[in-house]
Image (cartoon, rainbow, N blue to C red; front, side, top):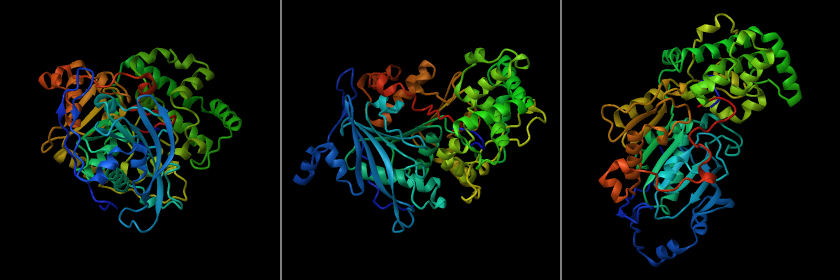
Length: 492
């Protein structure tokens, strides 16, 4: 998505979605879906085999490691994928998957961050709500899930959606109950694109804080957002620090050069230390609202003009991160910047309070991808997805944060959509979720997710206001906010 911000055919046939029904299993658990009767002795034997053996019997699936997680089986897996789903004979690569297995009788949540997959077990919010299994997929071209040699023209949203479709098709044979797709930020975008290209796979989609840059060159919505977000006092403090960071460019760049030398940072991709410095400073206001809240304004320098150079440096570094546009900070996110510059788009903002202090403005994604990788922007890709969501979305839910800049341009299911919803968390940032909505909306959204998953308890069916997650909060699995998905660099 944003320029400088941090942050058709499958190889297997589609297996139809199997509905799940069942009776209540008690107040503390969801209704258990009925388990299909095995049709043959071979099927019966497969159903009673150890889950690891069943998973590894899938062609192309391999075990990287199994980790102990109380109440679950947790696997880190490799899966053989075609580099090009349109021409599957032209080579393959290994894509990482993690699987948090609870029980094949439970629904399954397909989680994507849109970036690397974490190999530490955690649950997304929908997984906790439905008390289900969770499959997490690493996005193609993020290391190590990158073809070698890398043909970057095969990194697009259709190819990535086809990756998901093949994983679902393979695992649906084992996890036969309802499936939901979810993800936060670029993961929410990924879940949306998957639904657009393979609308028969999932029983519902829960997309968090998903940007929707329909027309790449029209970004006035972001300017309007920054003109009114939060309080004037907070906006003034932020713009004051940003101005001072550019006014004091010379002494602060000396500090930056020393910092880069100490840490071994280089600036070959962006070109110069000066361009990298300004890119970090230009992110400052956006980054604050992406990850902070109005209450955090108290930690900003009270008067930027009288603040020391160190205070200005510390504030910018804490919020934007001076390592972000060094080669070492950009390398992990090359696939994101490539997508931003070829299909996703990248919003721009004017920041009029800077006057003529900026030398480069918002630098395009092209500046953050090595020149050896060709890039051409494909107009119309995002418009197609937006039109599809507007007119055809079915069982799709979007959750946004009131103070999150990425929500300035958002998805909006409209005429022609069915059973689809958009919610906004008051005062919420890029970590907004269902739990943070006002009480009645949170209950309604939770009840909808339970219904889509086919595990609505009788009490909730009678009164949706009683809806709550079926799994208790677990500090080990739920402490990480899977929707916030904060990386040091700033992108969705």
